[in-house]
Image 1 (cartoon, rainbow, N blue to C red):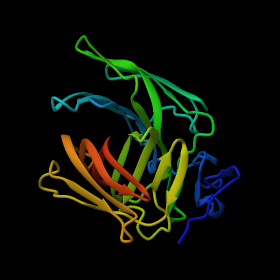
Image 2 (image 1 turned 90 degrees about the horizontal axis):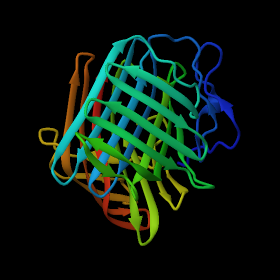
Image 3 (image 1 turned 90 degrees about the vertical axis):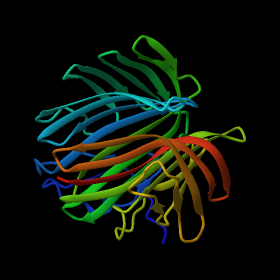
Image 4 (image 1 turned 180 degrees about the vertical axis):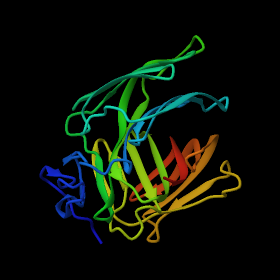
Length: 319
């Protein structure tokens, strides 16, 4: 069943931090006022950026869980299978913007970050020991995003705004080695929500050029089941084609480096994912992440793709 499309600005929550029914749906541009009053200790806020090229993936994450702050910076060499990563956490929250656009400047555990997110450009600067990024992402005129509210119930919900296939430039430096990002593509995962105690999801994303067209794919699974919402969409030259049908991720949990299959019952999505580099994370909070970077091929809607660089993951947590 098609999801409701929103066309006018709307507040995500009421004054008690309860989801407003009129906020449920998806939009092609960010429309939600994402402030969540009260609800301390249950709120999740983050900005996660990833830039991919034919040879590398670079990620920068800033997250606020109310009682814990997290900052991470990572560079993945897809050809050598190497990862360089810096992650730090501390008790307490961060001062993050209520909405998508704004500036974030912080230093945490030896990592310094400056983010400037505007309507047309995003500037990413971060530095940690032997690792630095200086990149810019561009939102072309008329660029459409995939912004969705996932409504588990009035007290637990998630606003996610996925921006994929953003033209990227700049560079990253790893132990004195400069890696150019020109010609790459950026992705933003912006989130604001109040989650259930137990959370599980799959996420897949990829970007690249197919027949001279700029392609971005975003697919999600498991945690949207039964909500009437999906995080699935295809962006072609900045125009979103929403996919309301659920997709399933099939993979070997004992070996995340084996090929994955991602598909829908109708066959509208029939993709394979071949991992190149694996990242596994377990932290005392009860978080488990199986994340692989690699290449996508197959069919999505009426488009055949091959060799698109991206990632697929399994996330499980008890908060």
